[in-house]
Length: 200
Image (cartoon, rainbow, N blue to C red):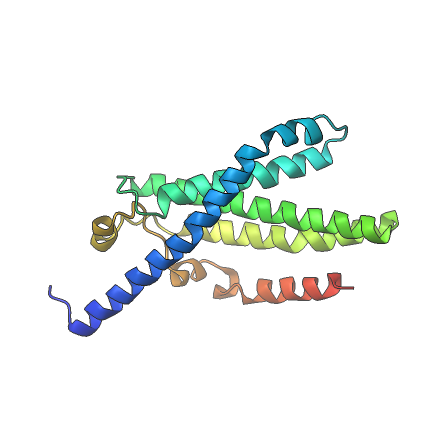
């Protein structure tokens, strides 16, 4: 089936936008990996030798969860020309979502702990702040993850294969079809309210 000139132009613009996003993200990924590799000595001497588990757990999740997320994104969402089955792509996508949401949750908890230390909050206020920092991101993670695993594992399109993208990414419409109320708007409003509630 031949494409109209308008369709060809639209596809060309979309591919150019994908390439631009890749060229923006790849240097940032490289910079982060470089930082992690060059700061291993400080990690061992300053973080791993300290007492207490909470800080270490948050540090490991933030540092190595981000590295795992980058590795999975580079494998599935970039022009690698790998041949990956649809079910494997779906499984890798699910792990990517888990790593992304887990590091985001760890970031929120870290911010909450920093704010509580800054204002020297009492235990009751600390628990309330931790609830604000963790409850809504956890709900958002669970709902979005359950929606993702219900989307069927479709094979890559011919265009994706030609361009070298190994995995098909479900559209927002496909994901929203499996969400409660078919939208994440309510969770976005809750996160916005949470941000306002946490602001001094």
